[in-house]
View 1 (spheres, rainbow, N blue to C red):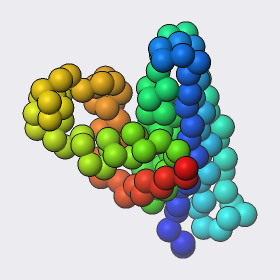
View 2 (cartoon, rainbow, N blue to C red; view 1 turned 90 degrees about the vertical axis):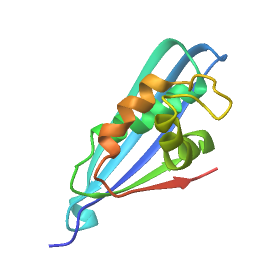
View 3 (cartoon, rainbow, N blue to C red; view 1 turned 30 degrees about the vertical axis):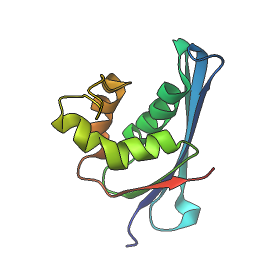
Length: 129
């Protein structure tokens, strides 16, 4: 049997920063053949949020609703999301959620939530700017 793969497409935005915003994720799970793909459309909104929060939320919810046993490709137009999850989060955790300049990490609550769906999984983060 062919290894299962999941492709997630994400986006988030807000009108104003902060302001009303929303997020969306498309989760495409292939188990065996592309003809056997299962597609999930996800989305949500918040009355007062930021663009970055909505970008994180889209990826978080997409990962939460994907199979834990598949290789995952996350497509996003957010360099903030990619850099945070691949480069900065380990340092933030080591420094008790402080940045290099000792400021509190923005969106810490979502980054802490993001850890569980990322653990023990093979995830590739792809910038689609």
